[in-house]
Image (cartoon, rainbow, N blue to C red; front, side, top):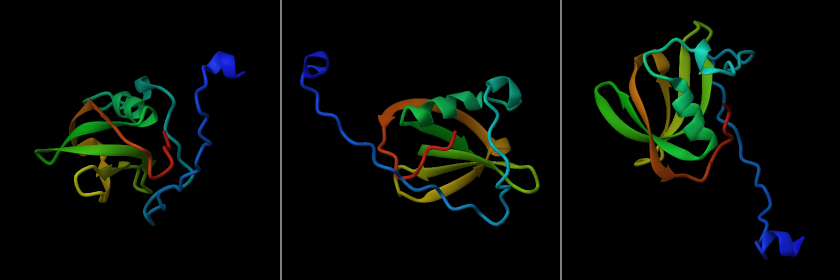
Length: 119
């Protein structure tokens, strides 16, 4: 198979850990598979696409823009959706309420996942 891959070195997959569940999160819920199910001001599909392709997102939240690494979407027991992400600038784990996100734009900044992508 070396000829087919042109001598590319295959790198073994490295398993990464998941974010811990918060006490207020519903462990039984999973994100729906399509954008039609969301119903928010902006398409969450952008964030899902960025996450699975390891691209950062410029997120508008609380009248501020920040660059994030998106990792998972979870629902609280009160049915609020939370976007779990790492702030690129500080490395801080954040959970953003999706109904409070003002904008989301995919950037050309890639990232190496520190946690499992759960979209």
